[in-house]
Length: 215
Image (cartoon, rainbow, N blue to C red):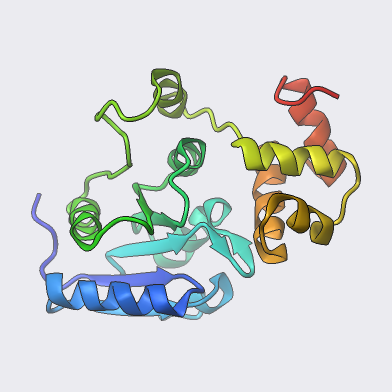
């Protein structure tokens, strides 16, 4: 299926340089395209819903939300528009989380211009675009887990869960794992939602129950 010649795309990302760079790539690859920008989920919700968007590019780590847990919120706002996750990480467990959450693709920010354009074209044409899928680049067990929709935390997220069990605040966790406090807040939000936990301690307890951590 060919993609729409003049797509309307909403980019939700708090990094201004990335938004500028992607805008340049879009204007060259899709001369008639319209790029709407928002640095946060709150700002994205203020974008006019009419006319309908063709694609939403959603950063995983936003200042006010974890993008992986907000896909449905945006689709409720803008209709059944496909959502392509964007992230500075190409960790396979996070890619699996994006699939489970309902994204149509996952675009690492480390991708070059041609890779970005190909990913956008695939998603605008009604396809899916995930790194490693079908290319034998990820361990077989990880790909199988992703296809089954089983999201499992990566090593950094396990470290965060371990620190949650110790009662560590976000500031202390940020120092320990090398993230900003906003990123930690987003990770904790995602982990508690993924584990269906109502508190930070419960998220740790569930991780132990699942065998991800040893108490």
